[in-house]
Length: 124
Image (cartoon, rainbow, N blue to C red):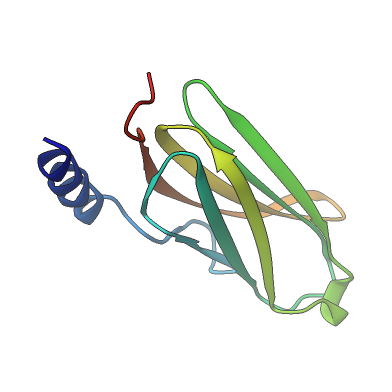
């Protein structure tokens, strides 16, 4: 039964986008793993185009029952191109993981991806 559930989740995840960016490619994210057992440890890597107006990177993971977020301050063109945010202990659910690049005038770009956190054996 567990093998069937894992196979079904794997099939669903192949249909989910692993990388989605909007705007003009100022921001891209990669979320790993795409499928994980609960409680999940998820890593979000954001690649930000160099720009003197970059001020903040806001990253969130949201399901129907859970929300977590983190903010990474950016120092314009002196900021590293890649930032990493980690979410630990995510309970089961389908998550939308989003990142927003913020500049001095507000949001500049956004990117999102979906992941699945599967119920662990014994979880209700």
